[in-house]
Image: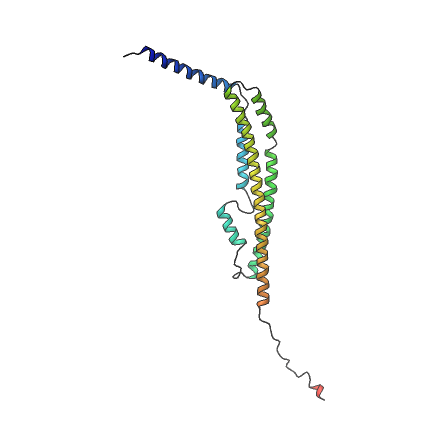
Amino acid sequence: MFDPRNHMENALQAARQLESLANEARGLAASPYSHLTRNSQALQDMAELARTARGLATSVSGLERQFEDLYPEDLSGADAARLLEQGRRRAETARRTAGDLARTAAELERLGQGRGERVSGALGASQTAQGQTAAVQSTNQMLAVLAEDLAALRVVMLAQARLLSEGAARDAAERAAGAEARRRSWGRPVAVPNPPAFDPLSNARN
C-alpha cells in the first residue's frame, strides 16, 4: 500500500542530503588553495634521506652486522692486520656518518624554503574560507605544514643520534683494541740472550 506521508518524509530526507552535499561542494570550491601535493613530496624526500644513509646503518639488521664487524666484543681471535683494518673502516664509517648529518641538515634547509609560503597560503585561505568544510580544509593544510616541521625535526634528530651512537661505539672499540694490543705485547715471553761464544774475561786473568 502506498503511504503518501512516508513517501513525503523520504523525499524530504533525500532533499536534505542533497542540500548537505551541495553545501560541502560549495565549501570545497570556496577554498581553492592547496599545498598538499608539495607537502606530500617534501615528506617523501625526508623519508628518502634516511634510506640513503651512507655511514652507520639505519636498519636493525644492518646495525647488527656493522657492530659485529666493526665493533666486536671479542678481539682474541683477531690478528694485528685485522685490528688495523677494523680501525680504518671505523674511521671511514665515522666520516660517512658525519657526512650524513651534514647532508641531512642541508637537504632539510632546502625543503623548508617554501614552508613559509605554504603557511601564509593556508592562513589566507582560512581567513577567506566560506563554509565549514572550507575552514576545515584550510586548518588541515596548516596541520600538514606542522607535520612537515615535525618530520624534519625527527629526521635530523635521528641523524644526530646515529652520529653520537657511532662515536660512542668507536671509542669503546678503540679502547678495547688498545687493551688487546697491550695484553699481547706484555704477554709475550721474555727472550733470554744467548751467552757469548768467547770468554770476555780471558785477558783479565793475565
